[in-house]
Image 1 (spheres, rainbow, N blue to C red):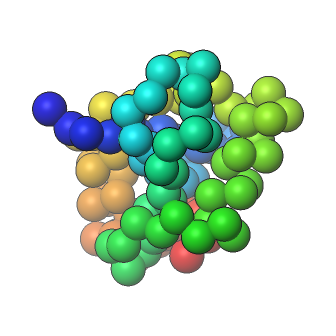
Image 2: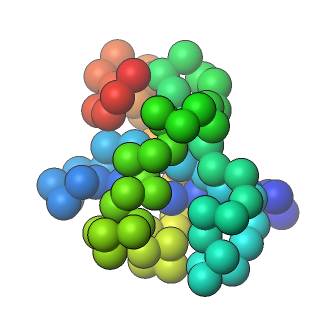
Length: 92
């Protein structure tokens, strides 16, 4: 079992644009643990510029950790598809 929770963000387009992961914390505690954004180069970044857009969405009510959580398998599938297609949908 994974030590992380995974989330997808579509920025209200209906099309997945970014994948994030966080430490396993209750939805009410979202943002208190580690938070990372998947990058095109295969790395996970926790730099403020990478995760602040998601935290802003969450604070505005446009992201819900319970509704936007996805399985690790689905997160991996999105990332593999984006990397192999050569079309990265979100910020690189």
